[in-house]
Amino acid sequence: MPAAPALDLREEFRSRFAVVPALTENLVDEVYRVRHRVYCEELGFEAVRPDAQERDEYDAHAVHLLLRQAGTGEPVGCARLVRPSPLDPAAPLPFERFCAASLDRSIVDPARLARGTVAEVSRLAVMSQFRRRKGEAAQAAPVSEGDFGTEANPRFPYILVSLYLGIVAMAGIHGVETLFILTEPRLAAHFAKLGVAVRQIGSPIEHRGLRIPSMMSVSGIVSGLAGYVRPLYLEVMEEVAHALRARGDEPPTLH
Image 1 (cartoon, rainbow, N blue to C red):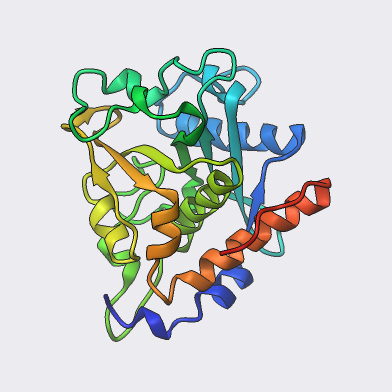
Image 2: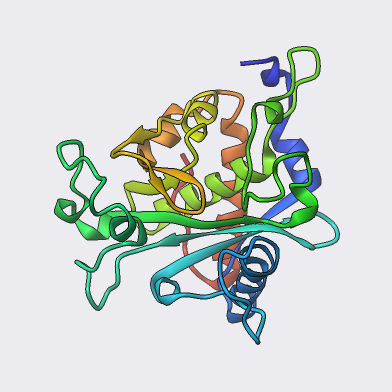
């Protein structure tokens, strides 16, 4: 890893961004508008909607996260955590439907896990002004080797990593232990730099580009984070906890 440990990730992040759990109807609507801008208007992954909000059937049992610019409050990106339906816990999560024929069930069979402990990360979206580098315009939430800079000029992919860490924090709050995700092939290698183990659980599929079904352990992410990344996780976790307290909920103990 380049000289990223020298960066004060917590202070840098706080000066630029804020993680906001979408705990109100207005905030959820804002998430849907970000998704519509990225998935419908910019990338054409979904049809444009008259109400300018991108939603699907999984949103009824998902929790959502916004990333905003510090100071202005302008939306930067969003992500969601899809949990099994409380009305039909055995119903497949999105990746289980897309990857029904490609999962290696000798590694893990999601249907055999306690459904209350699993969830899927999906609908990551980053607004266009934050993904304008060459080759990124057609990606909803891009990450590249250049995001980490060089040894002489280290950088850090705050946007994507903070969205993932925010979802990990939300997963822990909801008792989720295993996260599933359809990833770009290079994402696992990039996350390994941060101490996050992403395990491939099946063969690649074509879904808005080549995607690999993968899994992550929530407790493993928290315990395995590289030392210089942990302050950023604590910052994100505290922002999530603050939002819960403001709503009157008791957040979990920070790790």
